[in-house]
Image (cartoon, rainbow, N blue to C red; front, top):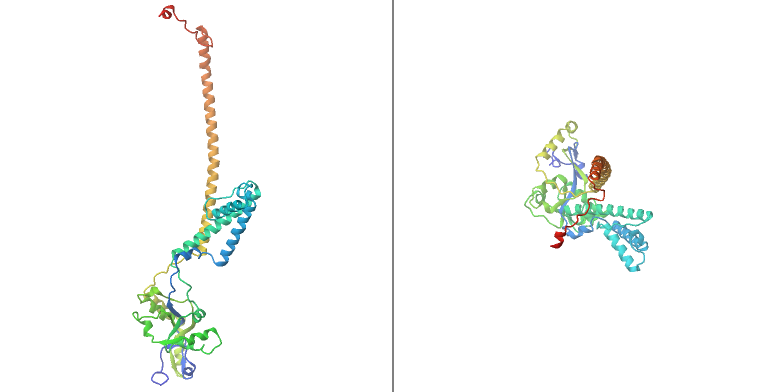
Length: 381
């Protein structure tokens, strides 16, 4: 409209083409909006994949090497696991493998060597097993607590290498940006080759069907508004890629007399924070998006391990205090009973001496009374 002279100013993107910039001036942009793309979520991974998900390939390799070295060490030195030395080679290796596997999986199979050096080695292995076990269990619960999808497309490089078709609205700044890579000697040159144009109404409509094999490129705000109004919004996601920020401004005719005063007014609005207030109020009025499930992180695992360590230390301290106090109470009880027994012994001593004197006066000696002599009449019967 400004090009054909039917309007003096308009509202549009600041990213204009070179031909338009010759006849159009723009004011200060009042809103910066990055460009991103929206596409269908990758399929869910099966649950059994979560068994291997907590560790990457390097960690699994290091863990396998550690298990192998520990098994060979316990097999070469049976005293480390507390087993007998006079056993065969395969039996010794089998017992060592069982000890290593049971200790790292928490089956209460703790080595109990007799020497101090062997106990140090066994202690190091037990600490390693506890750390690996806690980390694996925490990450496994984290992977099982939220749905696990395949590898998403979160950059322009991934989009260029992916089989997805690129769809962009005609006449937008994002389309102009993608077209700028045509014929370039970069990976991004694949984007305009597989890009097709589509009407923007297909994206803003909440009932229009979307192509599951295409990525829709547009401004981030448009994508968020288009996705939140759809019933099948859980099937799609907005990529984390942010590129080519575009700004909304007031394009005016080249050399317009009011361009400088309009720029001054827009700058005052930006500096006063009124534009930011408008945008914040618009975000509050929008329907809030449901909170996405969040998996546990390494920080959560570290906090859980710290709480476990502090709890173990507190339990050990309480056990030691209880043991010391029980020993003191038992010693005090033992001393009290000994004093009571001594007092009873001293109290019974005069009664015993009196009983001996009375028996002596009655003709009874210490051996006791004389046995009774049977009468002749009783013998006759």
